[in-house]
Image (cartoon, rainbow, N blue to C red; front, side):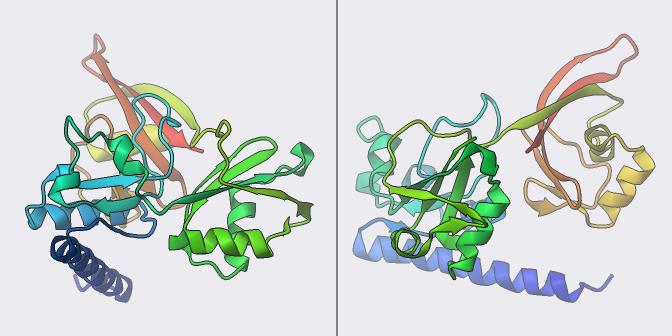
Length: 276
């Protein structure tokens, strides 16, 4: 089967991105100083980690960081946008140097936006207004939204533009505070579903996640609509494991939270969660 234009373009984009990560690693080794990317989505983080592994860079010399820690439900993988820091060996994570020490070196700023609870601003509202300022998506990390507060993580350039240009989000006025140090809204919320499956095959798990028949789930997978851990997976018999992340086009993003015991009929109890 010939690759589509979209697949060809993605392959080229991936190649250029991996070359960029290799360049950063060489720059770090040449200058003996940390190097940082901008904010990466889950797929880019996976590609970056694989690229650095091929260069035999020790894991202790790489660190992904969103600008905050501890905002995810226990056991839920982090699928948010994070920067990658590549550190020289004298700054590698060790018993002497904890991740918290390295976090301070990341060029990440934050901005709090306060608004009226009745305005009901959503992640989409906030991101749309930020893109309207001419910011590139890679300059904006996570946007944590609460009832009357949102905290976004960004580059210094993005923070400067937000402080000087952003006055409203849609029709809602906002009060802006840089370098916010208060309590953060949750990074994500999950809607949980439990059920049983005959096996851990991908089509069985997708069927449970979407409450669809296995035939329809298989059609989604074979049609290239399902990403497993950020990469397209078209093999319906592929087995998944606890913690795997599935992105299903048109339905959202899910995680296999827990694999439980077998039922008397030999079926596996699963708990899955949808990111909302």
